[in-house]
Amino acid sequence: MFTDLGYRATTTKEIAARAQVAELTLFRHFGSKVEVFEASVLAPLKSYIEQWSRSWVDFSTEASLEEMATRLVEGLYPLIRQDHRIFQELIAARSDPRSDLYPAAVSVSAELRKGLRAVHDASFDVANKYGIPGDDKPATIGAVAAMVIGSVVLEDWVYPAQRRIPGRERMVKELIRLIIDGTTHREKP
Image 1 (cartoon, helix red, strand yellow):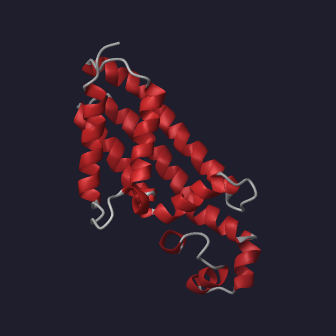
Image 2 (image 1 turned 135 degrees about the horizontal axis):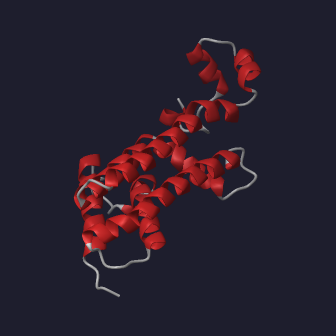
């Protein structure tokens, strides 16, 4: 329900009804709506991010540059797309320490940054393997993550007015091209 409606629009009454339990039972077991959210959304989300980053690092030693960019985007983009409402709410909550979602936002942010750190660390070997000119790895990884995340959570802000928002396949393809072209067509320092 949180994924479909977002955290704010999902009520504990609806959660209890879907679970076929009394709302009081739900609160007895979880204590609060935030705890239901953490158990049902955050735990799987954090697990996915950890598995994605680990699989990218393991995969990067054997793959072509295009395969690595594809794995990077196809791991992150669908996650953000599937849970875009949740990410929008977590991003908003991350800037407000008084929000009931603030601790969850900090936790997801930390997990994502940890995964991106693993990608960052592996990118040194990738750059050497493919002779990619030197770059500012933290800035590059941050820009790539922001590009992927922003293309989803800001879709109602960033695409041209009165044009159809590009679909998943089209966006993934374009993001992959931007990553490859942006990292391989640089002047050596």
